[in-house]
Image (tube, rainbow, N blue to C red; front, side, top):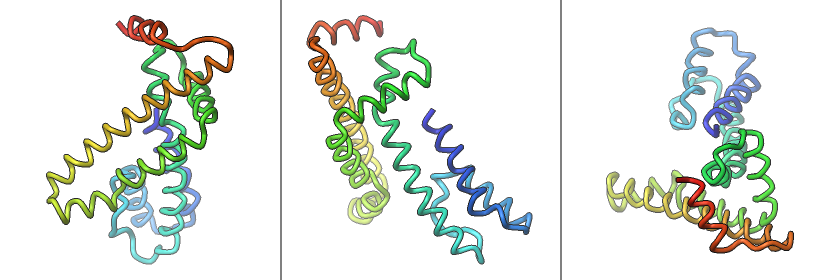
Length: 179
């Protein structure tokens, strides 16, 4: 679902920034680049449209970060209760993130720093490409587990604010529900 939302936002931003281009060949090249986002961020793009491309990339990075932030907990919500619809998963994920917003922002900032392209580039210069990919994969798994712990902490806080408990029995019930 995250990829579908990301693709839709990329296409909308592309129309916003590149809708005025009359050269069909350049527009087609840009359209293909947009369909491959985020894999086509690096240059060379189309010459002559540097202002539009830089504005598009800035807006795309902001919206992509926002989408990633919103969908950070949604995967765990969907795994725990697979009977929910996409809209219910989104609502629950946004609610859980808003419950502990400060901690969610901190986790997302650390994730953006350690899983970002600059760290990948630096690691590949120091350790080589293969080792850099391995290190970054381990870090991404680390943050996946960090979001799972965040999910459990938020569920625990939400349950205690409603006068309920979220403990071992509830975790066992979640695991039994997945079997």
